Length: 108
Image (cartoon, rainbow, N blue to C red):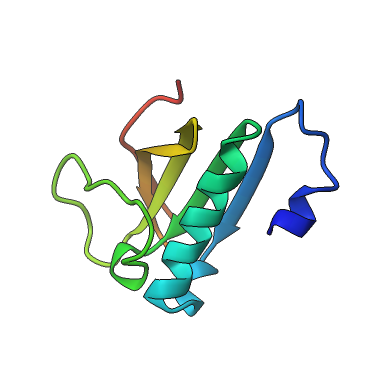
């Protein structure tokens, strides 16, 4: 990840987006991904947007849904960083293939 990010201008925000990718990583590798993004965010603005099913990604920062959601829903999460410290918002829950989406929060 640091090598891939090194080609992007450091004065512009780096946006990392994935959907149902981290579910294929072990929890340790998921935590390593979050740590690597936090490390990048110490030196540049980083925005991390991901859609993952919470039970499949225990190593990622996924806030709980504000109310009881559908079982097996994919969480749409926006994470920004303050000096490398993650701040995550659960924006929505959605069908894994996009058939429906329930917004929880307005984008800041």
